[in-house]
Image 1 (spheres, rainbow, N blue to C red):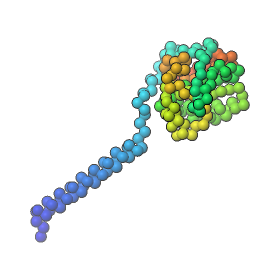
Image 2 (cartoon, helix red, strand yellow):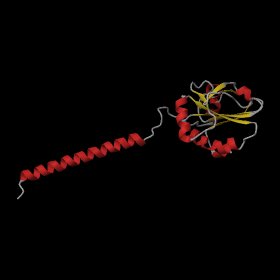
Image 3 (cartoon, rainbow, N blue to C red):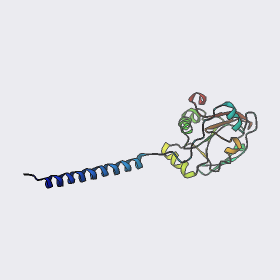
Length: 191
């Protein structure tokens, strides 16, 4: 014979166990989210340009003009001055770790640019725009990149070339003049 009090006691015990199990599942879910969720940094990507006019208006180093000179501190600590690279074709690439098209573009450069032009008078000069060295270092480790990268944490170099949008590419000819500019990334354009 089971009386009503015993049944109620058993139901409260089961309810308490169920509540405990749900709390544990909730805590595990929160921990999993915290461990595996990789939120984008607080910086929001600038909206993609809607027209050629917007791109043109934000491009400061124009095709046919002498590329603004700069000295960039490379990730490894060695400074590089653009004017010291005269006699070589230089691809100045502005990028950021939080920018999806920038990250996509960088996955292609080792094989499609650096190896392709190895031994020729060509320099790929990627410059991280507006980020600290620690951020770039973590990104390099994660992606296993070993090619040289420049740092422009205050965007002083970038602001000589453009006022908005990345990735930005400026091809500087052997004579120091800008011979090509682009915004964004497409595999076809890289080829």
